[in-house]
Image (cartoon, rainbow, N blue to C red; front, side, top):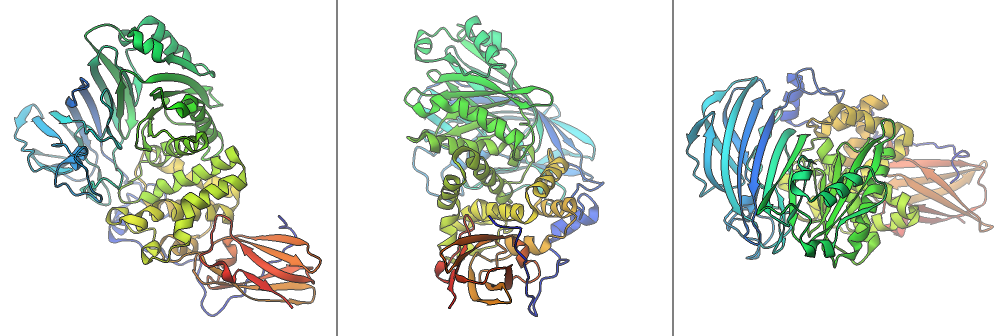
Length: 625
């Protein structure tokens, strides 16, 4: 690339975007700013607060019986300034009930009777909970209002059937279950919306508080349990040989095969009680998930994720024998944890472990991944890297995925591309990114493609939801990276993450943080990319040579402030590439004039966007006489 010999001039027309233009703020965000729980410099306000819970959960599973029994206690603390007269509970598995609100069709194997509440106790007193008509939200009026800075102790017994059809959760096979979203939880009560009462329709994702968890899973002997958190009683549930192998893996760079088919068939891996209770602990985390099986292979190793302290994280894989792509899964996980910790985002992996389970979901959970098996090792690695990237967004950052999906899927997609460049080289990674993340949006004139990214995800479906969450948002982040340069962009990203990890940022906190950390008012960019119905479509409308300068006029038909390469072919056949960052659109987002010194014999000019795919390439070439 030739950058140093370019003199860029931007011709401003009568309509110019002011760099000081304001971002649209909805009324609830305005109120949060007024209440000083949030601030216009992007940092948490002096009055910021969030609620939290301490969960003690015990579940009993007895495959192939699909009924799971659970009991829990919750100590829920109200840190808000409000007196809470009700609690809202999330019962995500009620999405399996016949007649539940869903964005897609459900076959009979997906359907269950949902979550059944067997007992509900508030501060030691049993109260009535009728579950027949429960949806994915349940409001319970408290016997005594919960004052600010006070706690309530809840106890709930419940049961549910694991669905035969496995997706984000369910029965992977008759003796392998993946349990997620399986326990009643108090919904988020936040400073800008109050209770999260959004209906879970099966497509959008989740919004959870940072809680502490102590939980146990009781299963028959010969069943292995993998879960979020740290196993507390390894020596009680595993035979000495396998307990030793697991402990060894915690400091091993080499992959250790803890249990494979011969050992599993011999049934000597777990302690030979009728049942074993596996005990787990995870603090300051947004959720927990569990996998159990009596025949899954088990591999493990570890990787240094913080070079300053030498801290390691465990990487484990659980998979069936036929899923041969999973034989390399621990190595893929080690690489992902290392790369994300040391490159982008450059924050040491914040948890103690990552376990990848062969399921059907291609889905992320705190410290867990549920991925399908594929015939392509390259694609298997691609998918697991995306899911592990979610460690940071939403789990480290506490994102409201349900309402602002682009704040987590967009970043996971961006990290997926950046690690892909390291894995495959820029050319191959770019082709993959174009194919999977941008092509559909760029080449589909459907008006749903142009709905602004800021539109709440919970009211979207189809292509509008998918592209807004993934490709459109991601290339916006990458365009900002191109605008700021790698060093300043990373400084801004880390500044935002440092301010908001363990909290609940909104898009405005992100936008304002970037403005504040960079010292630049970037609202012109945020407005155009995230608040508009723009798309990428550039056209060369004129080019001429005067006084040893080549002047090129580019019209921004679609309105997105995308970077672009200007490729000049001279009469001798030589080509020269001049990269233009989104800066060319700061003053005028309709038209830019690019001036290049010492080009006197240009014959043809071409625009090439790379991952910033143009909706109409027919006007991207201009021939000079």
